[in-house]
Length: 473
Image (cartoon, rainbow, N blue to C red):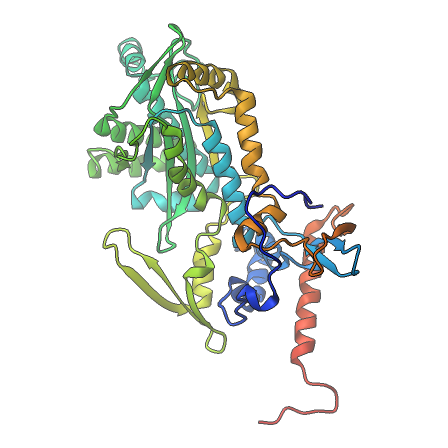
């Protein structure tokens, strides 16, 4: 059931009429393309040529905001008017649900960030590595680990040099207890904070996995119990460390078959893999945490939403089954228009659907949930200098305040200036009933399939002529 409370300070100017909603029935929609090629998707799933998560997310998207996922009913106590609010799918392939999920992730990250400068770092991989991660989706986890290790090594150069002298002959520059994570078991390591998100596509929807990181320009010395602001990132060292760590992890994962490709990468990229770590000149006042929001929103945008928004679809011709869309080229800064069969666009989009339970956003260092006590201590230390207070209870209060703004009734109010529970007679509707068809169902995939078949049959019946009539040309 939705939250009936309204968490907004904006004035209410009255309920909008249907004519005021600017609904365009001819607007190109992703659902039209999915319905057109649903048979192809189901055949790919049946033959095992598509991952099961693809069809699951497509079905959820098609059923989103429909009777089949349930609803909450509200009725006006004065005039008897009613309103039904259908439930949403929360799929990673749904634009509507993805926008809200993106804002929730951004709110969580923004609230926990320290009031210090943060650096936006992007770790990329060479083109010849991309097919490896597409063929083996489990290896995408190694991108996070390699990025984390690269940042950790940069903050702990003293430990690296000491371990290299000590263990250089064995080739192990880490603690024997460490597996993937570098310096995890060192007591005197300098602690860092990093929020990482995975993007698997470029602007042209090509398969291009890379890691976006938000790194606090601060290191905490656990031995001396002090922190130090660090603004110099050794760009060349970071590139080579990223190359070494990624190759080391991939060699452990794929075995000897990867060694030839690894050796070629060192000769082709003798300066390391490309890493973007330019300092942003956006901190023009003393409140740094307020400037983190734009970077966090960008990082979370493509970690929770489909690879392309529907606003980028210019037109969709259902007769010829062709779609026209655009993207802004990053290098030339020009808008590129593409016209192609809709199936080709669909193929480009479904490869970016993440696997079930795969976490697209991860937190490391003192931003990890297990390090909340250290994060509280750092907020306290920084608060004494900046004369601010951001203890755990305060952060929880700020986060809850931001999440309340994303409740369905409040979000509709802030977005469309329309209160969904406000009756035309001037009274507020009250909750009367809920319907949850998934309650008690163990095989929800079969349920969704039955719903899709029913929707398709109803659509076919509407398209077929009545009995006794013939279609004439």
